[in-house]
Length: 344
Ligand code: NAD
Ligand code: TYD
Image (cartoon, rainbow, N blue to C red):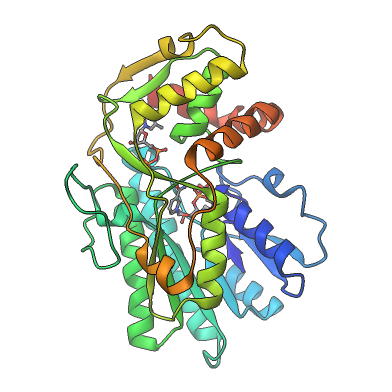
């Protein structure tokens, strides 16, 4: 069972597992919130080892029925509310989905599995639980103390704690990974990279929070999916793995680079897109810098990122340019209302 499989990262994980493991039956459990989109999985939706179940991770009856019906023996849990800005304007939904939803899944897995032999509950989390680094702090490692500072990261930290509590208290076979910012195809355009691509295409302002000097450590989403595959199969129960690409960029550097790439791709005069950059009011409690030390997963599980950022960024931009219909579908309706209210 993969929860949140209709979302950005989840759809890449579902695709990888459905194609790489024909002998597994993959059950994608997703409530199809604004961020979930079955179009993300059109290419594999008819695969004989793939099933979609529209269900809410908070709903005990729905999830129990799925566990029974499909004899679920492994769970990769990605379903979540994932956008920091939305967590600032509406934190309650984050506590309900990310904390209560995860607790519900843990409880159902514990009660449903008669013994834990060969079972896995793998929880996907974020580096944001570790808080905010200053420029000269060392990178986050697996032993960095938790210090979440946004309602989103607080809810993810809380869910991580519950997952570990189920390992220590009940012996549930859990694994956790904490990953840095992902980028790639099918990301909802509320997040920085797809938002900037979409706004450049439509000649709209590019909103940069504060001075644009906050730093994020970007990882190609397909490399994250591969890391999830490796951890699911080879990671130790009770262990945490940090996943990242050693790839720190300030937001301004990143947006300027995207402007330049898109000047060329859209045949605009050099410097045209940079004129769209607009500095706007900073995000409340905006974390300064994230950076991941991924030594443990590299050494213990032999995983490392497969592509350079410049190549991944170009591939991502090309995907959005070639999939304008997808963009149009996800940015109609609710998105416009969110955008107008948030960037008003
Ligand atoms: P996303 O917002 O694109 O997708 C979330 C998915 O979960 C959607 O398909 C949505 O419909 C589904 N969902 C939400 N609430 C649900 C519920 N109650 N029941 C069932 N399904 C529900 O998120 P994403 O960016 O793909 O992130 C996936 C996971 O990875 C999250 O747990 C997130 O915290 C974590 N993560 C994300 C990043 C990142 O850069 N995007 C980095 C590290 C970790
Ligand atoms: P985002 O993609 O929301 O990811 P996260 O907050 O989880 O890191 O934002 C990435 C960075 O870009 C973050 O520092 C906030 C900044 N940002 C902007 O400057 N403008 C925007 O419109 C958005 C959405 C983000």
